[in-house]
Image 1 (cartoon, rainbow, N blue to C red):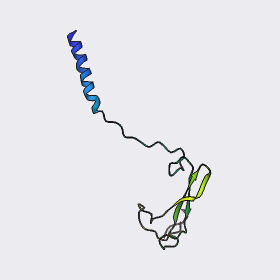
Image 2: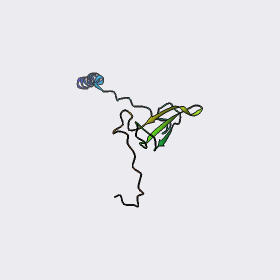
Image 3: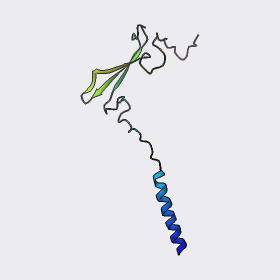
Image 4: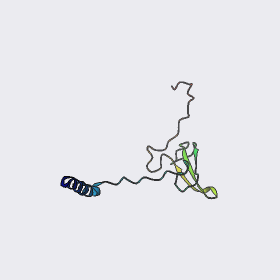
Length: 107
């Protein structure tokens, strides 16, 4: 009987000592309500290509314009222009190469 009590007491003490050592899991962001909600405000946003945009003096360099949505819809007043000259984007803006159909060889 004393062995059982001693074993139970040892288990209780050990679990009490180890409980604070349990590491919490890192917090994760909640998934966006919409896949096209780029700024996470709960409204649909719109990404549009501007393939012939002039960026940093390079004509035809191209850019992407993200127009943000709101409760009343897409607002042209709220937008962001992204290009290779945008901070964090690799490379620098330059003229794009026209695409070639897959059935044609690239020379």
